[in-house]
Image (cartoon, one colour):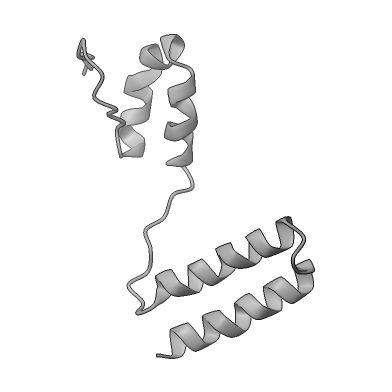
Length: 90
């Protein structure tokens, strides 16, 4: 099965692991696109849990707070855990 690439930019990336080998020649001329494709190997869907996005947001905030030095890593993660537990309990 061959993939014909269009002459215009569509920002298309196959979303199945099975399609990745078909893209090998395309990656030769567009190596930066392989980075996104490689992320498919570890990508997982979000669980259907109420408020899961909020819990993930708490972790993202903790990473930011620790990275910019507003909180220690331990404090930031402890705060994120408390927030995430509350979010997921609702």
